[in-house]
Image: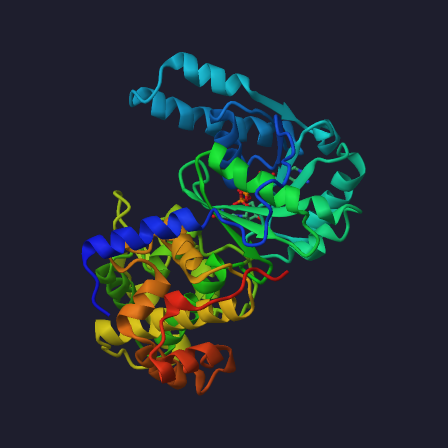
Length: 429
Ligand code: NAD
């Protein structure tokens, strides 16, 4: 399918506009009144999430367990505002006004009178359940209880609150004060007015929202995981991480899978001595190569944070995989990484965890830096054609059922159908 730059721009604009529509939601659904917002956790995400609300004029209560963690979190927030002020974006008064809307707290009970609370503590189900049990007990009736989990089951989190109708996922992206995307995750019992209020709030804080359903990783991360697994498989075949990244960089991603891993930190979900299902990562971490923050991960980093392919990493890979270094064309690397993303997106649509194909493109354009000139995974799928995607997936799925071709992919390939025209009939929870 050939499209002009103007056609693609028009598609992206229409997709962004459509994403606000919630199928089956009465436009007259009443909204809850949100004036005060509570944030639990003042770490990387909590601080950034809180900034969105303080910037938009909301009072924000932010909770940590210890005073020093709270002070650190608030200092990062102030530093971010101060840097924008120093660049001339707003006057010093505005920094003080925004900081004046923050109220630091040391107990969840201090949030009891907030209209909305967003939990952003460590990604751990037991911890989140403990916190949501307490929220169910202390929050005022009618408060919205949101979690920023990246991938955990929100139905399970909601089940401990005694009021699952008030629970929703508000999944922000890092850095949360900058990234435009907000995945709003509707759980099994989330009520219509909580959905309507969350969609409206997203607009108020200047985000681009998409409504998605509960599944591991929701829409964005679920597709990301598919790419990461295939990128790792390429390394086991002897393709070096920088060759994988280079192919994705040439496609238009600012960061490929291994550059992203180094930025996020290789030690997420790892602890010393651990043997996980990713032995290359384990070995790198044991050598204190934990990513950009330790100036070494898959790559070495110079003083300007420039990534340099590392002989140490090559040695570890050879040792663990036993594979001879292989040259693979950029085109073949791209197919191996991107076609599984398209296949996973189709499965998400088959399971009704996204409302429509264009929402998937909105998620990847605004949350993961998908290059706009190909419009997102679904539009790109139409550009290369379902038959080409099916051919790749028949190969990749042969030894891994998780990557078997989706039924709808087979149908599209047989009928010359389009990914962007898959009709889901709306979200199912
Ligand atoms: P983080 O480690 O930077 O921050 C977590 C904070 O929670 C810490 O400051 C910790 O002291 C605090 N905390 C822990 N238990 C607490 C409690 N009982 N009461 C109050 N505070 C408590 O982690 P993060 O990267 O901000 O991630 C937070 C959540 O956001 C996780 O669920 C993560 O999966 C999700 N998330 C992270 C990203 C990302 O890129 N970092 C993106 C999207 C979503």
